[in-house]
Image 1 (cartoon, rainbow, N blue to C red):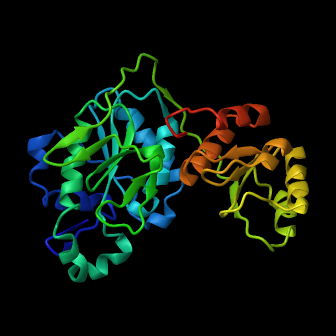
Image 2: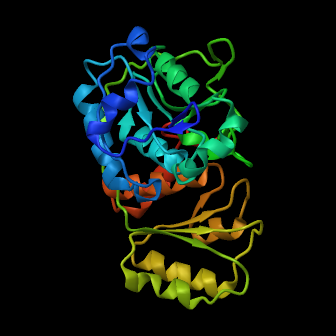
Image 3: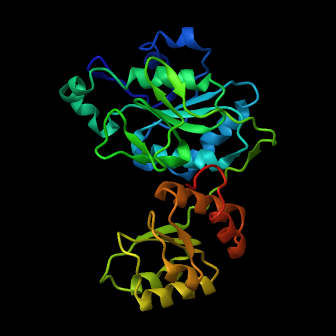
Length: 313
């Protein structure tokens, strides 16, 4: 976080109290129980941190009105997706927020602070606290003037105070002179289910015309449990790639073809899983989550195409 042109980071548990002293309003808005999870680089946030975080939420879910998670924005969408799948039938708000200044930029805070004029830093936290007290029953990201479902968040281009866009172009709410929810909160009648295991042996392969097919044939030797092929603005795969991918299916490795908004007939006829209606973060985390629940290819294919937590548009 940054405030007044100065940077404030929480890298270990003992940093929390001094950091909170910069936000006197918090004690007026809510009774807060600070919990330290992780203080390293955003790039090092992994499924291990997702599990640790969800376990801490699980311990407190019955006695707490809501949760606010402070997180570097660079990997926030993945953590938000992980929590969305981990907490099924959620009936309390879990809100992620952070600073629009990435931790890697904190050495330049004084130079770029004037561009943000103090907004989006302290404001993000205070607004997230309000959402966490609102009765919303979703995992959401509050950043700038936008409240976005966790499984719908994608990085804005270029990033700014509104660091995230919504993949579906729909928002849970807006920040103006307060928090305005754009959707009515649906009452959850089913019991909360917490399944916070993730299979991390999933590979994402960016396909471009001309790459060597041996990169695919060698994947099976790496003992991956799932594969996502990301296409870039083309709806085709060469025959040798399709043959190589079919061999992975024989080894019970689910193959997901990802290109946002595309309709690939070849994918369907080859029996691969088509993911063209979710963000890449949601697609990856969902596959990791499903593989931790089951290795049954038929079941995984069915559930990848099922809208479980609002990830599919």
